[in-house]
Image (cartoon, rainbow, N blue to C red; front, side):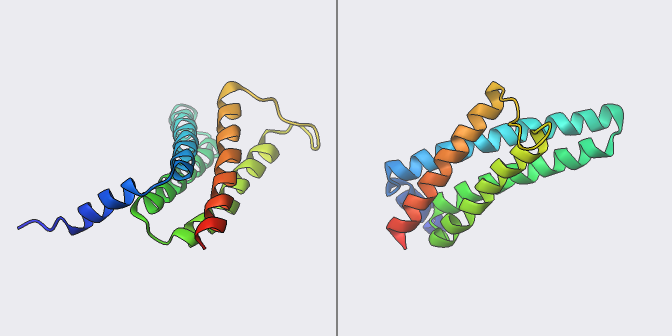
Length: 139
């Protein structure tokens, strides 16, 4: 006999997600996909050229992608919600700060913005706003 209790609970939770939750999920999906693409690209560069920095960057991007996916899973399943929102804010803000620092030719000069980084940063800013709203609303 199969226990459908957790599947039913998750399905019930998905039905109770608000539009604000879905905006956050969409923003996190965008950022997770961008980090996944960049991580795979860096790992590919490492395999071709053997540069240790490419390996480090590839792993870092994949870990970031995993962080966004974990956050999505926790929200959709309704686990540790206030904590997830609260930890998601500095995690996402840290992505923005790291992008700025690693892509600036010389501080305080701003980095060049390509379409991929623009989509990612807009998604991350939206995600931070959503997380703040959800934390204030649900805690």
